[in-house]
Image 1 (tube, helix red, strand yellow):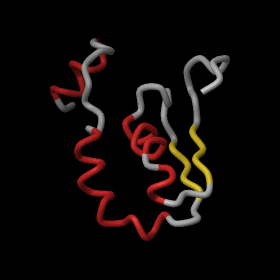
Image 2: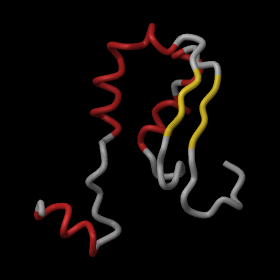
Image 3: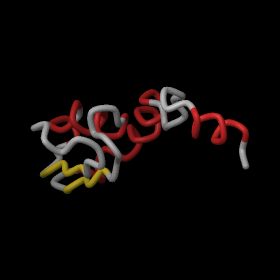
Length: 79
């Protein structure tokens, strides 16, 4: 098993997920594909998901119709 993933298993604060900078750099090439589309982010917790952060902050810029996320953690908080 990958050493980084093994360490992350025991350290929940070990950030190995996709970085916001990487998401921004890649998705800037696909802006026209998001116009009037629904984006579904399958994430454990939208409050810490960089994909959710990117799409929520760029909702109008991308022309999204709707942004939907899953929420594995505390579902009582109105996000």
